[in-house]
Length: 452
Image (cartoon, rainbow, N blue to C red; front, side, top):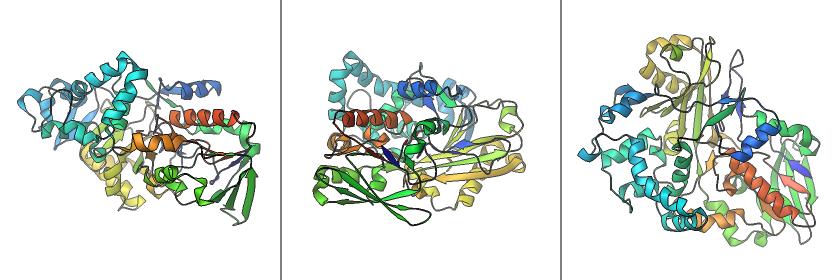
């Protein structure tokens, strides 16, 4: 087995940035949280004896800064009207989560009656719906006012993604709205998970190999790559291959002969939607947020930074790193106009609106990471548009002769580490069912979170 890796490290979009932070500070600019229900991911964490701590996703002290109003989650839940959304009278005393529960519960109940039978029915029926269309023309139950829909989109941080697949957003909500779900992070950075595979695989990995061309033969597959440091070409042939490159990157790789990939596969490679995302982390010399009784959790805002996450580790220490801005899709595209320095400055200024100008004196350093600007991803994670799941998903995961496909995009757990692992196991099973296989190409692990 040979692994071609385009960069100098393992992990792909599982990326933890430690520099330029001081005193052990870091930020996960890839997946930052792992649900306890993602059993494959959790099992590998146990296998490698990696330390974990709770990822505190929400708390009663979460800040909402919306429509110029500052409040805490506990106050909002007691009085949802405090945010001044122009909702209908029947909606005034309901939070965004309660409104979503009303909309989603009939679907959830139907699925639970017989998941194996009913999930395909739901997929077929709702595949044509965007999140926006579902909220506006809910076929099961009440229809919401425009003010209530706006409230849901802002508070759920999905305002920039409303034109995307309802089904994919519904799946995300099944994770986040489940009161029994718990989230974890690997203590010290989630990149420790892909790094834990390295001792077993390092002899098989060729780093800095950027794939340029795939040539399919009846009896084997040949890959042509260029060393990113020396420019030296490499040609390597195997009996078969597992391609884990995001389709957003695979579009730029030549495949010969043309018919080696079916029409439906090429269509899926061209059309599969990937979501832009930017994460900005800032280190402060004082943990001012802890003085405000914030220990983990988040801020939700309609300011350009959209989401803020406070660290779930290092409580009581002097310095700390905040995920000062986490944006997706349209909300991230707006910030692309700024340089990294400009994104950090924008995040700092927005955070000062929420916490007060005094925090500017505590600024130490910052970093901003745009997955759109990252050459080997070109966006953060796969997320269907309406009508793509039924049409594209079977073609995304289908082998093309000796070439198999894995990655978070080739899984029903898109956007998560779990999707990368699950699809890798599936592809390995497909290959193991053959009497041969030698080659596996980047990336070893792909993202997630996305939402995380």
